Structure formats: C-alpha cells, structure tokens
Image 1 (cartoon, rainbow, N blue to C red):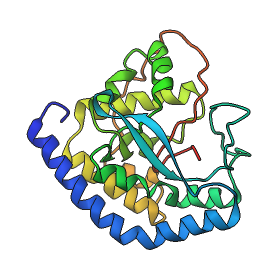
Image 2 (cartoon, helix red, strand yellow):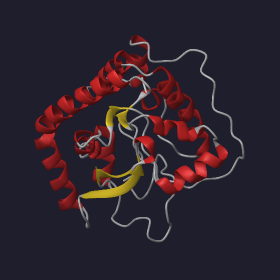
Image 3 (cartoon, rainbow, N blue to C red):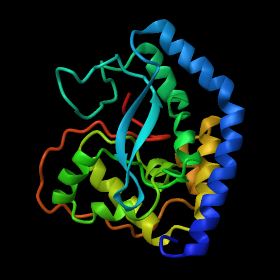
Image 4 (spheres, rainbow, N blue to C red):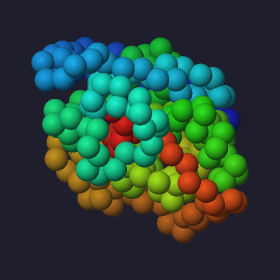
Length: 236
C-alpha cells in the first residue's frame, strides 16, 4: 500500500474521518485524564516530543504525561521497564487504559500520523538503530500509527532485542499493508480497549503473520531510548 497512491489517499480520508469522530467522542475522557494528572503530580499534563514521520519528516507528538515531570533530567533518555519507578500511580492507570494516547488523535487529524502504522521514534535514536538494524529506516515509508501489527502481537519495547522483533512486524506491514489489514487492526485495538486480549483477537482476526523472519542485527549494541507506543506505549 505504501506505493499505491489511491490506497494511500483513501487511507488518509478514513484516518481523517475516524480521528475527528474519535476526538469528539473521547473529549470528556481526555479532559478527565488531564485533570487527574494535574491534581496528582507537578508539571504539565500534556507533553510533546519530536518524532520522525513518513518520509523522515519531523513532527511533534503529544501525549498525556504518565511519568514524573522532567524524569530524564538526571538519567537521560532510557528504556522504560515494566515496573518503571518514573511512572506515577495515575500514570499506570493511564497506560493500562491507554488514555495517555488520546492527544495523538490530533496528530492523525493533522496528517502527521495514521490510526494504523509503526510507532514513531525520536530522530536521534533512529540514527543509532539504523546502524544495528539496517532495514529500520524502511519503517519511515509509511505513516506512523497509533496502533499496528507490531503493537498487537508484541509487548512494549524494553531493549534493542524487542525493537528487533517489532521491526520484523513493521516491515511486514510496510510490504503487505492494506485497508483490510488496517480495518482488522483497528478492530483488534477496539476489542482490546473493551477487555479482549490482543492474543485472542489477533488469532481470531488473522493478525499473526506466518513464517515471519526476525530482522538481523548488524552490529549488536545497547541503545537507550524512551520509545513511545499506542496501544503499546512505554514512555511517559
């Protein structure tokens, strides 16, 4: 689909219509989450970071803060773990419910992201990851997304090995993406938000690619990052 102009235009039209509807429907939840963060911790309720989108174009991503304000001031950027002490008690709830991702609907409205696609990454980390994962840059041939086949099948990134596994799914999407696949991924995500595990819906909807080859590592190295995910997000 990455090279099909008609399919990409139709995908963009669907993204715009659905994201506008979702923005209106989820506005009360967004307001609730913002107030909850403001009442329980210091700092801004919504934060922003620079990411690279389709064609390596930088854009500003938005998210409701789920970590303590300025938590990387001393440590610098680093992977988020399952029990990350930087995450606030309210932040754990926001992550579990994925309310922290709601502001990214605005990125979809603006055309910087899609509802479905690989998760966007910081430009400084993409440079590092491309050195050890030569095909990593191919993810930038499509719009980054709120959800995607990698997010549905795998847990949040915690190290370079997890990025390597997700890359294989992202490359599968770049090569085999279609509106039908997008529809199934959005349905799987919707079911997840209603309590149906990804593993169950992915199996039922045929979202587990067969014979997937895990991307090779050219030069193993440790990369500290605070990768963002929808639905599988793991940063503030």
